[in-house]
Image 1 (cartoon, rainbow, N blue to C red):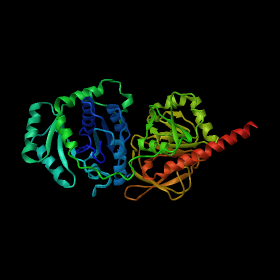
Image 2: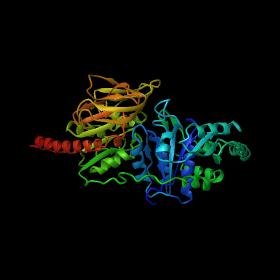
Image 3: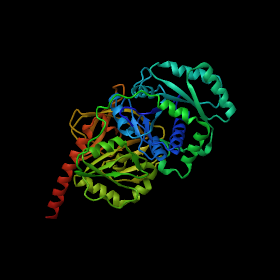
Image 4: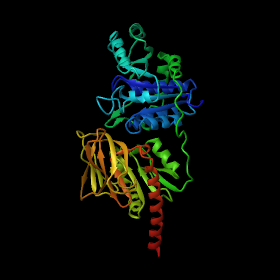
Length: 470
């Protein structure tokens, strides 16, 4: 791929629920069947859809976000990941113009399309309309002249005859190109649960992605789709197109299994660039931590669905607790933080005993969802950095903390509008637990601080163990 020439398309919806992910997976898999090297991206702070993207393409899917990252960082992350790809596909979030506010486009798919100068393929649920589809497409295409709505793809259209009606209406009334449709097919359904779709690794249907590909190959004009992707102008040269990695200086144990699976790929890349060797381990299945670790990274996920298995693995719980007691650095987000409490109480009220580093329980609440962008401001120095440092991230959880004794917090939160949202970042020793999923690119010194903390605590831990022996 020549410098700056990145064939690319944004797949956006008229609203949530129209089938953006279904359409995206169908296109990703069909293009891969065509022999294309396809690079996926996801707009917004999502961990679940990118897992399906990776299963469909064999490549990590990177998050891009106007509010958390801004234009320059979005372009840099995009350019790094797309450099060797034949085509890049960015799946949008919610509706095309939905973002962090009802009166501007910050954090929206539309904003991202403008930042990447990418054409938009609009996904519409065409199941119960004909000419009205043209009115909808015309409205979306004209709402913001800087957003290029170049094509439309209909979902849940049962017949070729129905699609011909929709296509004729679009061609008569707009300049937007109809590029096909997908039929309703219950065998292409991915199950849902409280935080979104079931993770890609949990799919029992081994041929699910092949069905996605077959559907698109039958009813989508992939030649037209690729032509739109290649209609993009070159992007400006990236200010830092490559991440230059330091020599490996510290091993970080990264929890990775069905209970802990929410990680931004760029967070991991930044840690590796600062000298981390990431060593996966499973709190569900492994009996001990990997050797010679300086830090544990416990990402989010679904520990509440695996409470009994996590509780039964007493050897791993003891290993994590002793790691903390010996001064080891632990950074835990959302589900990872819940694992470090005394226990997780599931939706039915059953308590599963956890590691016990933090004197609190995490209780699931069906009617209490916390959702939104967050700026994390350090109110005291901790493993993330010095007082006053601020990073950006996102909260999405159904649990609350129930303290058993007073907790110490290292951070204050504000939302996308700058309104106070309380405290976060439980801290004890070299352990920090946040509900917020931070994107390290929003404050790159976060990775530097974590690596430095890991190196210090590893040295202190070795000294402590040596003194205990003598």
